[in-house]
Length: 278
Image 1: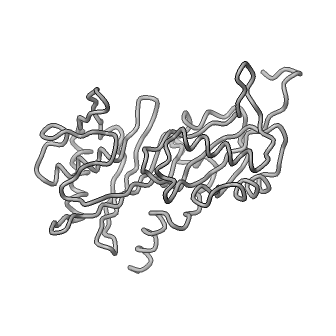
Image 2: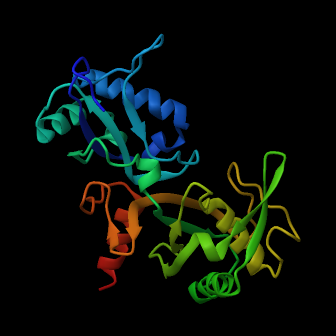
Image 3: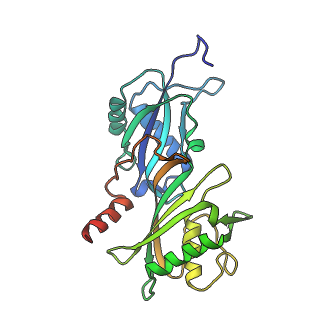
């Protein structure tokens, strides 16, 4: 409960992408960059109390290094009610192009934290088959469907620990489509909560092993960090394209609406593919 001595605060939620070379920023580097943007935008941000005051700001869950995004969010607490459109314009002016905010709006102070509220994450993967190999969309789709129907448990290593990916719990759906460049588009709808979330690179490595007739993570190790060493794919790109709030009533977005797809993203390229094939 706010006392008379405490200032009135306003919780501004901002959506932004993470594209281009900036997808290689680590989470701590991203936090430092975003806070610099807020300061350069000259927004009246609140600070925490105590011996080491810092900006009152909160983020969505960390992205793996090398994963781009069209749907990141942060909540910054302001001491003045700046019109959301003006705050967005100031942030856009202060931000680098590949982190330029795309939407902003105020949310209730008592609303759950972003990491507690978001429980559904959509990923888009571009899989590039190696030269001389033949990988079809139906093959990849069949593997994902089998994992989900059979409740597959995929072991993987993270640091010195061995963990297990519960596909039936974390992978809600998967779809595959061809790219005009010969690559494959793999879309994953995943569940996340306090117990864990799906890391797309594990799925990439597991698909590669399954296509070679291996039992993923058993016949050959899968390591969850870093770029995966693959056999049937010469490369891949991963993008977090949506973060949502799913419950019995349906699916909602953190800012109450679908975000625009920024130019230069994997999502924009896939949309262009779809239009050219009409």
